[in-house]
Image (cartoon, rainbow, N blue to C red):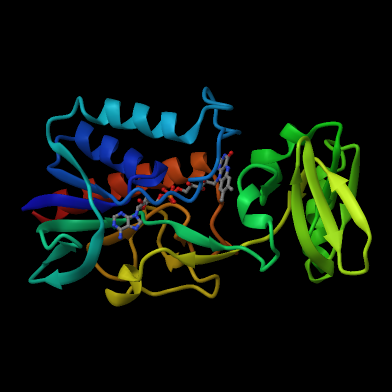
Length: 279
Ligand SMILES: Cc1cc2nc3c(=O)[nH]c(=O)nc-3n(C[C@H](O)[C@H](O)[C@H](O)COP(=O)(O)OP(=O)(O)OC[C@H]3O[C@@H](n4cnc5c(N)ncnc54)[C@H](O)[C@@H]3O)c2cc1C
């Protein structure tokens, strides 16, 4: 019996495992290797690690966690989770299972890209969603924003001090995008072509796993899991952290590595408090 099972080995889950390990709690972290920033070559806007490849960040985190004897890390995919007499039973796709007194869901989201041919190949490289993460990399060069309405205006204004020009193109006007040696060519349905260094889009995020809903956790209009400030969901003993969850007073999660790390730490602290007060 583990004291906590953490599902997810992104920044939220890894930080939670570190925090729980430092408190000598028996923890299992499970990671299926499906990361939201899986196509990204360099992560940005993370203090002391601005520009570090995400895989390097994860490897460094795992090396740090390995120093704590009570934390076990397993590369496996969880198939289902059930509440089991005051604990939580986690069943892996290979048929194995584990049980924990507390459960932390840090399974993140997957992005559904707008149906524009050519986008996927550039996702996380020249096609991005977040000016904080990728804007500076296009400094002094032309960028385009493929969004509608107020959202387009907002992202465009954020990029104005960074880029040489910002072109707003409604996504419905784009026939396809084509990778070039030093940029990306947008081919519009009306025949016009625009070449830019970077293109900003808005993917639709979906919960990567159905576990929170299956356990009965209250969901928010954003599609995220509702948590309190220490990551507790509406189901006692089930915590959530990272891109999949936020407090009800926020419009959505703050999508960033630093925010996911902070959320993972808060949830781990919540679990430690919970384990103590339950005794
Ligand atoms: C294109 C792109 C670029 C980005 N660039 C930056 C950047 O430069 N800087 C920045 O701060 N942020 C960036 N972000 C945001 C950042 O990647 C996320 O905020 C962060 O990864 C969220 O962390 P997380 O731990 O919640 O989820 P994730 O990192 O997505 O991790 C989810 C974890 O859950 C695991 N998992 C899922 N399902 C299962 C299962 N069934 N069984 C076991 N494990 C499972 C996965 O394997 C993974 O380990 C970027 C996002 C995107 C999409």
